[in-house]
Picture 1 (cartoon, one colour):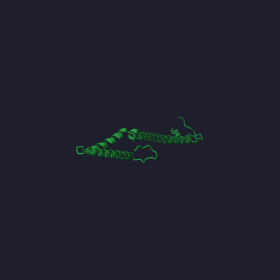
Picture 2 (spheres, rainbow, N blue to C red):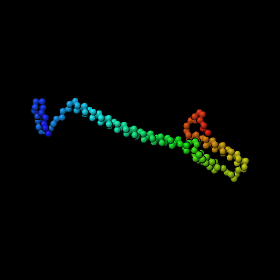
Picture 3 (spheres, rainbow, N blue to C red):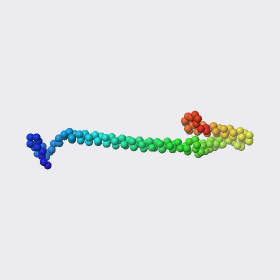
Picture 4 (cartoon, helix red, strand yellow):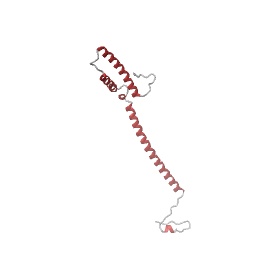
Length: 142
């Protein structure tokens, strides 16, 4: 390693011992500033990219859940849901019947009343399940 001479042509004591002093001129300070600024921008970019990715994953999950909940199998058009509700209501009402003591006329009246209440109860259950106000002009069969 060659020691540099100063303006007077002398070599400093530090340089004689092999320690070179780093002098920063304007070019070096500009490079250092650019390096620090670049590192800050890279770190900010990594953090923001991570947030974008996590938000995208969360949004994708929410959209999938929303699409599944709005699928026909959970709505008013679900045959299985209607079967389940009607079966539960009919079973409860049939269990209330005492067929051995009723005659045919009473049985007909009772069945008619039961069917009417079945329609009313199924409508109420489906409206409670929806829990949304009806829109004017919608083709809601209930």
